[in-house]
Length: 310
Ligand code: GFB
Picture 1: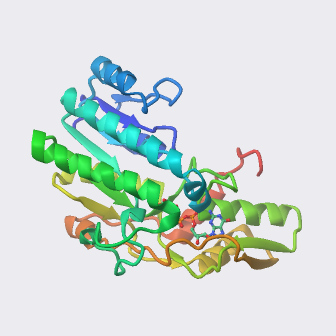
Picture 2: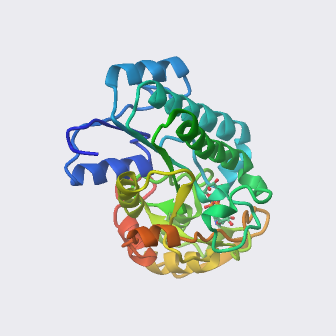
């Protein structure tokens, strides 16, 4: 990848895609092509083919996806499966037809079996049943990995996959019904502090454990892997450290400066008990995350003035 070549970042308005564009620009890559979902509906095969024929990108980061937290995944099961299958099939096929030099597909740690041994190594894929709340999303993401592998084997395409852990960062979704836990709790503690409310409700039991990576670290890893990894399979991207949802809530409570109580809502699902990534493969290649969780939460919290609920 050099600065004269054209790079298509699919999903540039999302948290991951926008972090990728910032990272690429900071490294001197200016020839970046993007389309909003209104300009190009990636679920439409012909529109995607036309776009690739017109733009002829050299490199593709496939960060466009229908995403959300545990409730969104569990409620919009059809959309999560259909939209993600269509987006990845259309983009990967167009990249093949129009001879993209290299494509990177972004998945998620929910591809692993619910009860896979922790920390999750790349070879645990397809060794057991998935977590039911996000099975449709996981199946779509597993299909994306398999498409890249099958295109490498049948057509010789240099298409790779990257599996990030749970992410947070600028341009995250703060809608309390559809968001992930970290942005949801930042908003809940902030509003409770502003309105002097006595308690903040945390969904589930607080005992599941999760690992969190800042989107800027992920973008750095994605560019690194585009330059240093060309193979079947995929590479986990994470910090290698996790914490319980209750500990996360306590950390966010401190960062926000809220003094009330944390209560539990056991009617909401816990999801996977734990999904800690094994990041040995990535570390062995020489990449390590830089933003620790507490610093990352402080950074994100300091950047929220433009949110209408702030
Ligand atoms: O981040 P989250 O929605 O998704 O939830 P997953 C993580 C944990 O936090 C669950 C708890 O145990 C939730 O019950 N939690 C506590 C909350 N309070 C809240 C809250 O206010 N909002 C939310 N959203 N959760 C998603 C998958 O799973 O992770 C996707 O559904 C994807 O497929 C994504 O892989 C990274 O970590 O459980």
